[in-house]
Amino acid sequence: MTFDVDLSSQNYQEDNIKNGGDTDESSASANELNADNGNCGDEQSRRGTERPRKVRTGMRGRPRKEYNMVQVASTAVEQTFMAEVPLERAIASSDADEWHQAIAIELGSILKNDTWEVVERPKNAKKVGNRIVLCNKYKPNGEIDRRKARIVARGFSQHYGVDFNETFAPVARLQSIRIVTALAAEHNMKIHQIDVTSAYLNGKLKEKIFIEVPHCVDKALDILATTERGDYNIKTKAIEMKRNLRNGDKVCLLRKALYGLKQAGRSWHCRLDKELKTFGLIPSRADPCLY
Image (tube, rainbow, N blue to C red; front, side):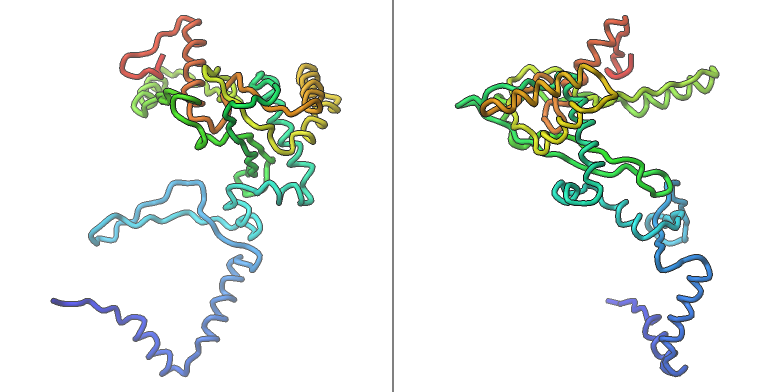
């Protein structure tokens, strides 16, 4: 049995001792070099958006990946890697008004789609919890673009056969996307992309699901009810919901799907499939998402 020992670090230490142990001076010179190259103390590097370049070293195994590093402010790096902002922290911060506005936008989408109905709390009915997920949307240079809020149901508390049945929803195959792209390039055609805002809120539910009234909804309703510019129907529904919440113990009865529900993806696919078929489109046998 043989062992390969890497003596590079040991040789470096021995050479450093022979040279008088100039560890501090070498590190200081390295810091000065970084400062000259633009690596200031308040900046950090992170991976860029480009795909990494594969570097073949000639050794066995996978090739080494070399990423394009970009310099951004240290505060931006900390915020970029923060996937979710805690609700309590956001409400107590100096940006609380922006977060409340983001929650109001999300609640406005729910009211516009008639996602739920405020009803009296049933005695024996099971209720599904919910939470508000907050996050920051960033520009390509790392700056904050906008605040985003999402009211999400706690789908892990659902029970099969009671709150949901089937959950499977097909997605487009990558081969179908490549074929369509290749045909468009060959015949000099244009490709249009459509993004549906709050897509899952359009899926209709077959099950009867109750959820608790989301936290911080009162402040969001006040913003929607007092906004001068905006959809008049949303303002009317916000005032009505606020009035209903004041009278008795209320919960929300879901009419349409909500993010986080186990059947949300399937409900949205069924709704989209039905609408596309009304235009005369027929799904392919090879790919049900290709019409």
